[in-house]
Length: 156
Image (cartoon, rainbow, N blue to C red; front, side, top):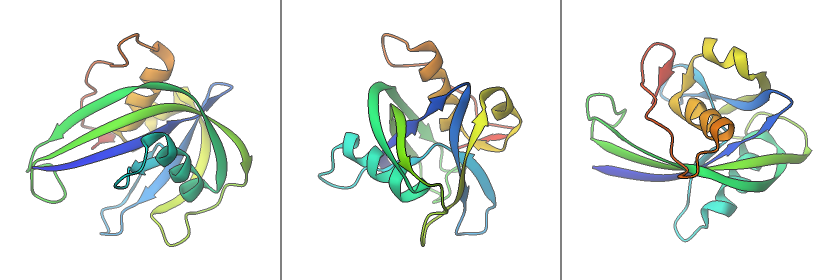
């Protein structure tokens, strides 16, 4: 089984959420996700989410609060690597403080946009978008929301 620890930014402002359009380098298409990504070895997830926002969007950000943690196992048949995979995502409530949106230089993020939350349901998106929005809206004391099912417009 492979394993990945990731930190994700949930930026909500005036009924909109900041989304990044991921473009697969393997030609699998594109979908919307939250800014964020892999926590590097010896890196604090708190620092990782700020780094990832800057790399992917071109914007500076500050963490306002920890929202929660999501852990999901992706079966080998669904995994892009063909091996069972566990992804643990740490979700932070983040506020953009400056910078200008741009595509990620030499990266996989093509654009970043503010999207009205009601419009998210109609987008091809990563499951982490739904998890992050739920965590920001519900603010569960445990930092955990019920599992989000993958299928239709939602993918791993």
